[in-house]
Length: 83
Image (cartoon, rainbow, N blue to C red; front, side):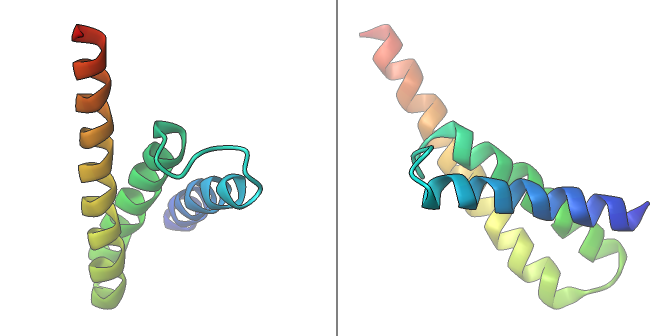
């Protein structure tokens, strides 16, 4: 089961990355940020339970930065909707 979580988490991050590189989606869009948040969170949790501390650090920071960016975009969307 843990291999499935790792593969799905990695695929979410990689798919978003590839789509940005191919100029299909914008790196500041929720279509990019949400897969990064979901994938990195899944990988950070899996790494935590596997006591893989380097990956916990890497994916944990990735998840925190992604979460902040998602929050920023959601709040930006709300402020535009209210104007």
